[in-house]
Image 1: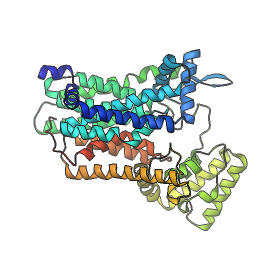
Image 2 (image 1 turned 90 degrees about the vertical axis):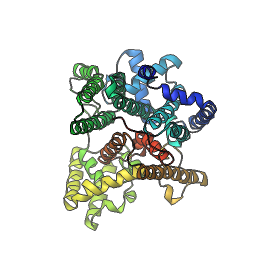
Image 3 (image 1 turned 90 degrees about the horizontal axis):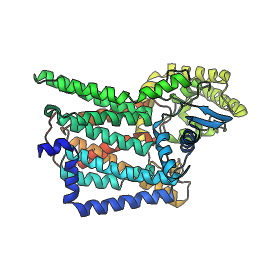
Image 4 (image 1 turned 135 degrees about the vertical axis):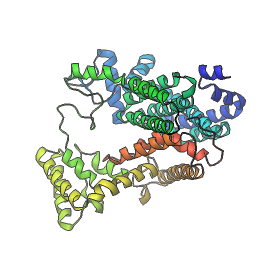
Length: 470
């Protein structure tokens, strides 16, 4: 059995599937049905989808990693992971065949369900793994983004796989098993090539390994296997960025190992003053749609600014005038940006805790608790019930489901505070949440990478924990 385990770290989950074949068959069919419903009823082909698709098409047809326009311009505004995925799908199924992309993502998301089950098996029990698979299979938020041509589904898949391999590697430290760490490094590298925030996986796992080192020093156990694992993980994770960085140095004459924070071209002006002003009051996704995204190119309705955007009547007048000046040009000029920066600095100086503490906490809460209907026809101001009955009902239902998942996870955490590898899982959730709080655009999709852990903790309500081998 030990030899078998060393050869295949996923043998146990396959055994669970064989022993409960009918359960997993019907749960998988239900998962496929739910995802197909989203694919055919609510396919998500967004502006970002077409940007990724344009890069993939130019890469295939002209061998240029770039965007169309007056000719094809090389770019580095998106990392190459998702364009490479799209290019592979376009090669097989035809250029710009986004429906094929969504179907392939659907099967990848089913794979995520099995990975969540395997993590739960390792951390809790085989019985809990069945419940985890069911909760993942029927999760409408995972299913919704499987029907969107965006990076989320693949990023969640690689996140779950990296955590699974990291846990397997920790459990095998004293057995001389290194395949898990090699695989974990490759998977983390793939996550980083999809989105820059994939690097949070590397940081989270690295911090957990350092904590294990300290534990082993305290208990006088050998910590060299842990250090070797950390080195393997770091080197293998970052190695895929080397060709991308060299390409940017050669083609763009710029050291850019990741994508720019604001996805801007080298000569594209970024209105940092406007962005800082937004962060002095931005707390929820509705304002992202109504205020942040329209700039530049569309007007802003000053009446939709929340009351927290003003500290006094004179400041309100100043803000309304700034918005009016922007609406006249539909562009943030350097002069106008400087005025936004001056207003932002005054607001930060007046109440620094609001900018550095309270608003980030509110943004994090909004990303975790919002109904997650940003890809659905529900009004972003769902609580006003100005929509038709169906979209309003959908928003309330999705909000209630999300709340149930989060409450169940919190209850599971309270009940099972000493789960094996809980330090790794919570480090990732807290680190990612803290990072998201620094963004001026609180989009609920950014917390979906944490949903494998949410599902695992929800399952902890009903099962006993397994012993730790760390």
